[in-house]
Image (cartoon, rainbow, N blue to C red; front, side, top):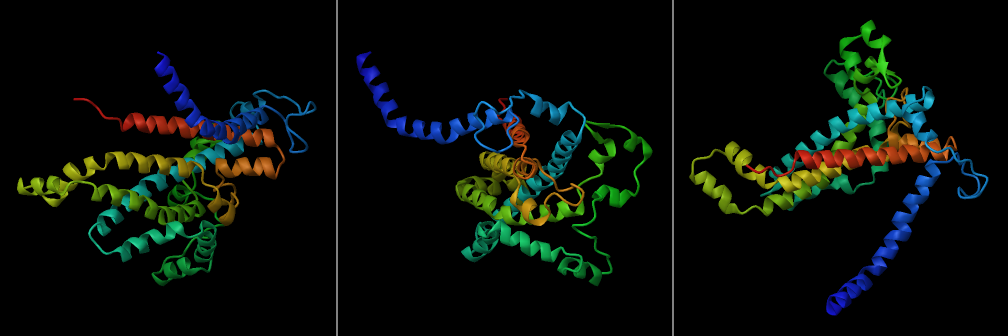
Length: 327
């Protein structure tokens, strides 16, 4: 017992510096931020002084229960982010896997070329995409070359379903949920959000390509050779041999993609600032705007904690879906 106690004490002494650092720079700031979310702090002075009003859960109630602009903005940002996540995560995962399969047995030039957008400044790429998707930009000029009138990418607030189907039926505009009509929830992402989705998929696929590439090169060649000897086609070998071996990497890519898409900020900040008509507004940008522009730090921090809870719940759900199932 005395020997085990010494071992435990030695172990705690070794990890103590890391525990102290994490406590001071991770846990303590989180607790301080949570306190701010329960107050009406306006950014002046310290949030821990006696004169700061304590509002309890009022900042959270304004996001869900109370009718008003705060709930409308928050639910609009959630809607936009749902569209964004639903498009980006599958597309970037599929593209990354395709690129990894394409460069698995090829020279490093293609690997570098596909990975290069991921290491380029997102701000610089966002500025370039603004020029590409301008009303008279290269994208609209290419569409005009094939006889298609390009949209006003960052001026048209209508969703893509709205553009395809026309005006909504009255039944969808008279009723709704959480401050938004059913048509607001179902009209689809705006063309501005679609442009941002294209940008993000292109810039993030390279990073996930490297993860899939490392996993592919770690699969024993004997498995594929054995399946080929048994008469399996290339497609069958991919679905029955290669893809099951990539399941841990697939979970990692989907988890990182899910977290990253719910935290999208820099592309929104550079390209649209939430416009047109709040169709590119996201929770991360709304938190920033509420705190640092409207000087409502309590509500801005509350949005951040709700976003954190959403990410945790979705990650746990994804882990449950992709868990190993016993026969």
